[in-house]
Length: 84
Image (cartoon, rainbow, N blue to C red):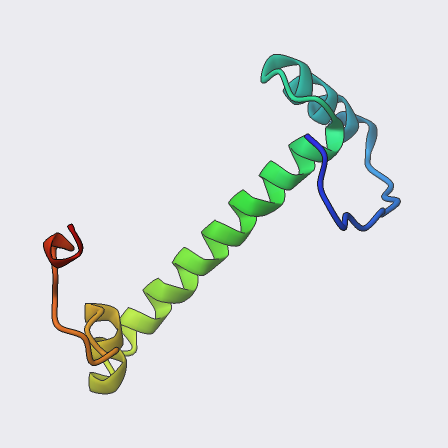
C-alpha cells in the first residue's frame, strides 16, 4: 500500500518487536512493515478514543451526556429514506 503525502520516519526497535512486525507483515500479507505500523497506530488511536469516551461518560455531566446520546447537532433522527 502506498500512502500519498507520507512522512518518512526512522525508528529503533528492540529485536523482539522488530521480529514481530516482520512476522505480522508476512502472516497478514501486508506489502510493507509501514503498513503493519499504520495498523498498529490506528488500533492504538481507536483504543485511546474509546477510553476517552468511557471517561467522558463516567463524568456524568448532563451536557456531555447529551453529546453521547448523539442528538446535539440539531437534526432530527432519520433513516435516510427522504434521500431515496
